[in-house]
Length: 138
Image (cartoon, rainbow, N blue to C red; front, top):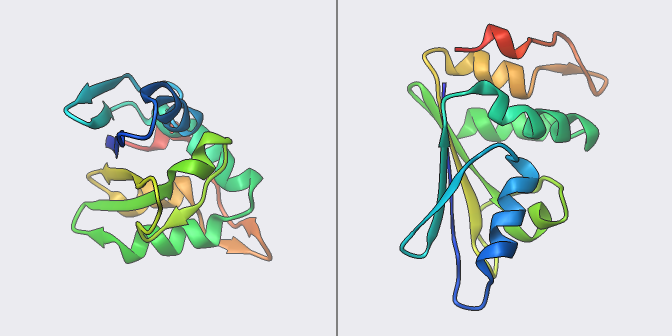
């Protein structure tokens, strides 16, 4: 499993606030400023733990699953998160139309469907049908 997160630090933004927004969703990522972009990468599935938790707390598993499958290509998927919403510790998927730009999340796995099933499993009446453990993901 590979995770890559990147977001632009715009001239009107402080690096600390942008970093806080990313860390609210991916607290264990080490972020590096490359030009005007903050970039973080991990091969540890536990880097997805907070995202996993927030998707359930906010009851947005169906939306997350649909978004990840819609953007799936081969063994990857990517999606955009609203940076301002992430700053307050919540998840909101976006199409990129945001005054401050999105947080771009890129996931790669040998079995991308299994990774999506871990993050956003199928649901019945809003509840996960089957939960996978992070140890099941590679």
